[in-house]
Amino acid sequence: MIRNTEIKNKQLHAPPLIEGHRLIMNPKVFRDASSSDSSFFEELTNPNSSTLLEVTIEENTVLHVALQFKKIEAAKKIVDLRPSLVYETNSKGNTPLHIVARVGDSSMVKLLIGEAKKLDVESGGRHQQLLRMVNQDGDTALHVAMRYGNFDVAKELINENDPAELAMQVNKAGESALFLAVDRQHYDMAYYILNADRDCSYAGRHGMNVLHALVIHTSSCKFCSILLLKYFALFF
Image (cartoon, rainbow, N blue to C red; front, top):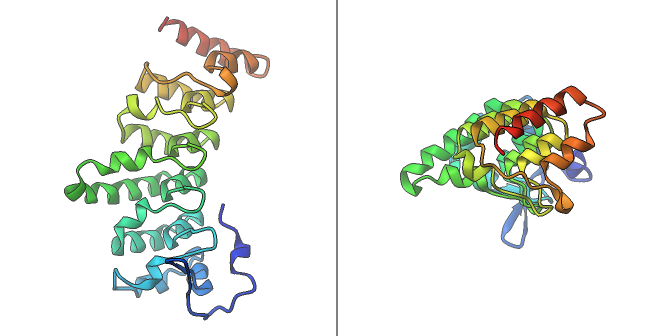
């Protein structure tokens, strides 16, 4: 997560510092990217501006920051100037798409995927790569959307990708997106994944699978669990 404390104890108009090969974000840039006033970015015209290359101490780019605070207009301007930022990762390996999957705004998912598609002219199908990129925990953006119950975001991610590939990915804990959906009792999401791809991964952490998660949660939502179990029975 991006913390407001990142701008504490810094001068608002201090020039960006250089740490390694990356520019440390000017606190004023952080403030403008996270506020409702996007005029600062509207005035930018140079795609090579150092402002677009600056990162916070957690290596969040201005795009990460704008998306974290749901500043869609600022995000649009940023990706218009420097589309390659959609692939940049922070210190935890999170892409801007991971950030959006957590905050839960499907319009921002469309923005990022749309920009990635524009780059496909040169890279050929690279937007599919964006959807499958993982962070340090091995989570795709779909894993994150499932974990935080953001159904609209999850639908966009599934619809824009080959469901067979995306739904087969498991994170470092061994969890599939379907397992996370059931484990968090997001049964509507679980149904959506199953309808999109019956051959998706059922794997879960500690050697468990989706059926284990269903049994665990039967007492809290018996009707939902039994209904989903009947659905699974169609595939066995």
